[in-house]
Image 1: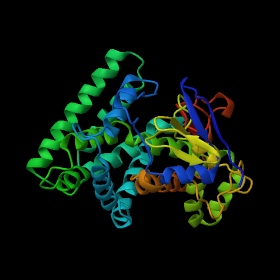
Image 2: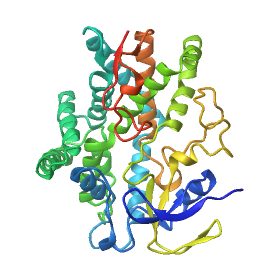
Image 3: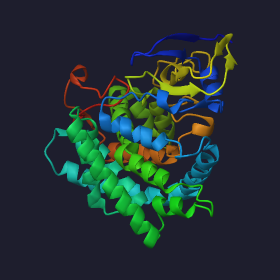
Image 4: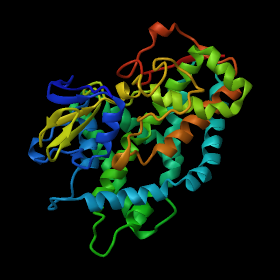
Length: 378
């Protein structure tokens, strides 16, 4: 098996080991000697395009104060989230996602085309799903969208103001759920606390802030990217028109091509907490490791014709949602949002097409990350 593990400078300007082959990336995703934070907290660096993004990521990943080892708490959190987002619970949520999509398409098609699919459909759909999961009023989705916009603001003052408003909202929400628990994510996380308070309340606040501030944006961008791929690959779109059940495979192929990693880093950044021997090299404790998921998802040893967009690809074991201990808890929610959203979109608007030249589209970070706007007509 060929190996590509090399040390060099990443886009953010720091030296790191870059791992790009599928098997090595998958293996390291399972390795508990790699963690999201540096073994020396003072040495952590957070790369992004805005202060709010840096703070939110740091809050969601931070260790519990005063504890050198928090893997037990992390495992407890993941077990709770996994139960909350079980296949059964997601199936129960899908009718609501369909209803949200139908309502948004009603509003969108009431306008004369062209319209921006991003602001009229993808973003409000995913924000409303988060409201549903949190059991908060649907109109609060507008707040989440504003805080997300603040996240992108290069002005530190405005970005921090948005963060403060978000954290105030989350703290109030957690207090309300402590007093009156319900059937929602926050209540489930609070219920997971044991007598030793291993499930630290501060981590719950941080995690909920991450979900509301950032967690829904990836799915929204994936819907936009999926719509763009199906519009620009009419042969694949015809396969779905002939057999609607192919949409599930289309979603997996969209996710394989979709790149959710930050351009400032170029992959998933991890830190070695012990020496790791892999691929003929030694990664030392404290070294930064860059897991190049987009490259792994195009590894020709795993994916035949890796650059082709093929919705019939089977198997399709992409690593977009990670693998092992850090496998994304929200993968089922995101898959449901993308599949239901794209199915509703193309069923309602079978003649959907771009209203601009593809070369004129502006991307969030790179062509596989989603678009700033997606003007469409029908």
